[in-house]
Image (cartoon, rainbow, N blue to C red; front, side, top):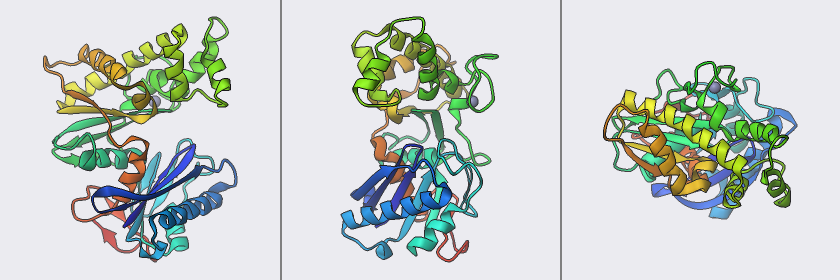
Length: 333
Ligand SMILES: [Zn+2]
């Protein structure tokens, strides 16, 4: 059995998987908002222990622990270089060795989106395709590519569909560039835009948010607003779909992938209707008459953790990972 950790800005999700990526135990908690990297390590470690207990195993019996984190990762040293949205990980930190030292189990690190794409490739909607583009539509817009049956890494970060330009000179993105897909489609950008719109137009978005006891516009809030016929929600999501269409259509034209797999909080919540809208929007920017198959991701919000549990699992792994049983040593490839 292996453990996988999906370390995100809002939650730490851990699964313990058996053969075939079958989930046999899980645990989750909120990501600590203060306290720095030591507190994150402490909470990751205790969530792994909890998940192991739920699976009925001792942590020491785990073959490995994989951690998927957002942002750029140095997989050779197990260091997170720059992590978006996780408070306390804005500076480089040797997360892999730190977690390994606490648990006494080999730890491998990977990018959260890459591991989720790899999980969809092996066990989810990507099964049977030699090539596909994975798009994770949530707070940001993440992406990953499978080409010729393997995760395409490029120089380490290939597949950043969220930062493909949808509109030259357009809105400023969190990354510093202008006109990125994410600047129109990311849930963070959508919320910022909705707050401005709310001063001018009537919208139920923020009433729904408060009614549900939330402090931000979750994917569920967006869905309910659409169901209530909210025009601000509809207009902003249409614009988001337009931007996604430009990015995805361009990527398809360049790579001629067999499938496009859409996941993430918004992708999942908005479901098949909006998936087909994305497909239509992408069609307008695709060179080929025949567009690829558009599918929803199958592994849901556990996909990241399941993918992380596969880090370094055997010769079929496409991840360049290293484990840290006693500091950076044995390369698992
Ligand atoms: Zn950007």
